[in-house]
Length: 69
Image (tube, rainbow, N blue to C red; front, side, top):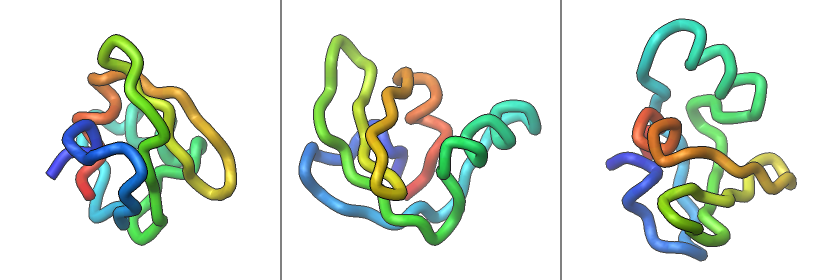
């Protein structure tokens, strides 16, 4: 299921990242790689704040739909 659909506070493992090569590379630089654990801190107007690799990152709904957990 896409990262956008998980409930805040739950931890999930990233299965894959979809999309164009540029988008995949951008998300990979932020730490969104298969096997990494991610959790949603909160949702604000469709955008997400997530914990990944001991950092908080804000991503758009469109980006969150490309990350499969």
